[in-house]
Image 1 (cartoon, rainbow, N blue to C red):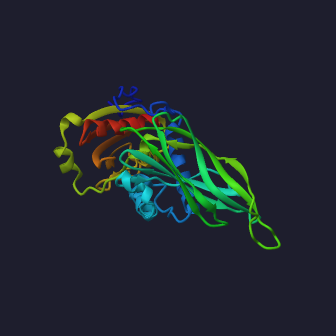
Image 2: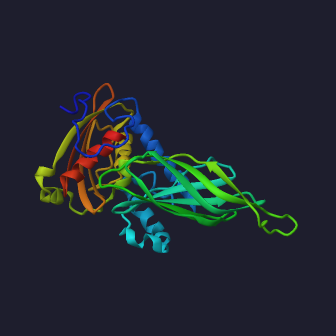
Length: 335
């Protein structure tokens, strides 16, 4: 039984593999570390120029991912360069690429399109004595070979204590393309004449090292509001069903574990199943989500906690396609 002890490692998936991190079936706490990253991304969102942080840490099931898309839709639609990319599928929570209280505040937002990934860099200058012009972010794709740089849209001038955007457009293949992208901020510095307040005509080129941008399989999933989980489950092709067992190691309680897994999958909980009854030793969560192409995936997560605190999880998924169902397990296996 999945609830009796820590289960065996998951079976091999045919989904394109993502960059491996601490696997879910390896205790100690790679899964919890991933949840912390979700929370950090949410915390950074408020400083990223108007993205509401509400619900981001609980991206699982609150519609947060879809919310980010709506907030950024106006910015994307205002740029004619993006018109040919097709509909925006998802905008991810902003992630800070600079330390607090540094000269420049830079946040990255990942926008997922059918065949492209657009990186939006929200840029703020905090140095009144300088004006920064022709601002862009140079990407190193050595650790993200699935992506191909297509276009860079620079920011003419980085505003002082306000937010401006520059963009990088990357082509991506189908599937859960993932990787780590090195980032360097490039710009022209023009000193401000204190007597006139005007920038000097001549400037010099400079650059600033940023944190890496990481793209993960979970960036491609978004919540799906679903009124009838069980009815929809039965309508989906049984041949798309995939099932795996995972040992999650020792955990304090089931509620925190459930919330962590939901946050990683970024899907919507159905029928109130996100709430674990007090002192429960087993629980089942029903999730609904979508992948690019509006392909649906439904998930049953069954958790069990042994007397020793070890938690096991059974994951059963169905989708509009086998690939969508397998993508669920690929996201879990990379966490």
